[in-house]
Length: 104
Image 1 (cartoon, rainbow, N blue to C red):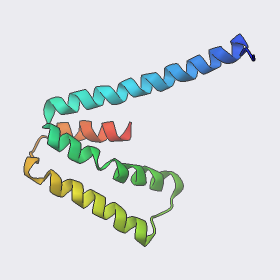
Image 2: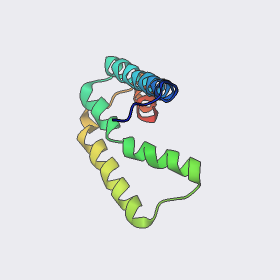
Image 3: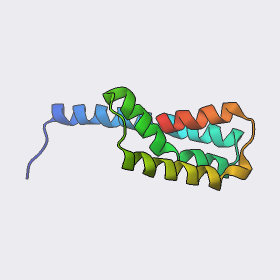
């Protein structure tokens, strides 16, 4: 049986603590965004997390999408928007909180 040295365990504990704190930030954004917008609208924007991932990837790597990936991304985002179209309102603060949830 291999017992991990205490110094290695402490390093992993710190990493776990940082990841857990990041997850709490995501949960906080989610809770407050549902307070300002309806749940169907929240789910509509959460389905756009794929779009957020590709936007962040573009800013990090400066590489665009190929045509097939762009088509797939467009279909997913259009489907999410069509599904939540009747629940859109003008609460921009709630939209910002949802996108912060997506980014976190």
